[in-house]
Image (cartoon, rainbow, N blue to C red; front, side, top):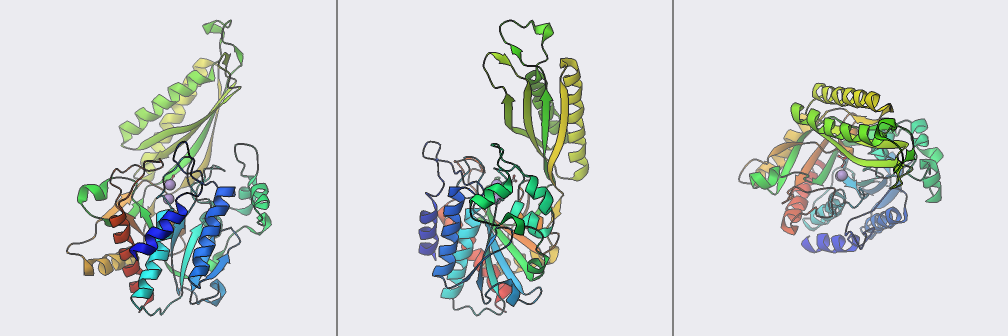
Length: 412
Ligand code: GLV
Ligand code: MN
Ligand code: MN
């Protein structure tokens, strides 16, 4: 099993990697995405699994069925994650779950496991939302949490729409939409993921089980000012949106600190983007997350108020648009307890249960399907960065844990 994990990892490693930053740029419906998808399909076929591409561009590899139509409602056990990345992302966020799924299947086969239920491995499309601004597009569409009409309106930074990008990649954008029949076949979805914090490092455990995902969302702040000459416009005559934006970044930090929440402006675009011109427009994207909805609402209201006050002082017009939102996710207790029981059998002590501020396809599906997550220790906690890491021994421990879970769920 170690060798199957290692081999797959090495094969996937160069795909979509930028040679100067060392980070991954695997954005939805690009060439790098196509390479990752071809890799997935080849892994499925090499194992004699039935390959299926769903209406939303998610890839499925089935054991014990030729596709979801063969499966009785609630019968399938599904595992997997995503292969796309944030800009200059790390190697593990997403791919660890997909590679571990194939390696866990190899492990189960080498154990001689007999499957009583159909098993599927899935690669969800566009989990990070790096290109079109909305995370978990593949799972949201399937679950009906994103309508076909809204998805058709999504645009990347160059103005290319999602349908155009899908069409250029050879997919039919008219087919996208809710997939309730498919989801109804799933009795359990288990996503393994690299931890994106240091809880497991601190507790000294290689593997943990997820309890909940914080509510989180993305808001776009457009500050409209007036372009003018940087060398000749008196300070008092300026309508400078960069000032309003800068004050809003500081206010976001302050609101988050006071509430024990998180708020990040990680993306910005400036027009006309000239060194010697006062900007006409500064557009900043806020990502904010908190342990509960009320706290998140308080933080966002506070940031919006501070932004509006500062914009009024600067003579700047402000619009705020909520681009996406995911409510709190509490993973199903029954499945979580089942995982604890399965993994508790082999270890000397209970497997830790931990929450996270990171979003996942498992969170989106949790409203429709019983879902659970396994986390693998990240020694630095760094994620969404080329420095993201996990020890191979821990990855192998993750594969063993996933194999135990799948055996417990699908082989009795
Ligand atoms: C996805 O990784 C997110 O939490 O933004
Ligand atoms: Mn991520
Ligand atoms: Mn992820």
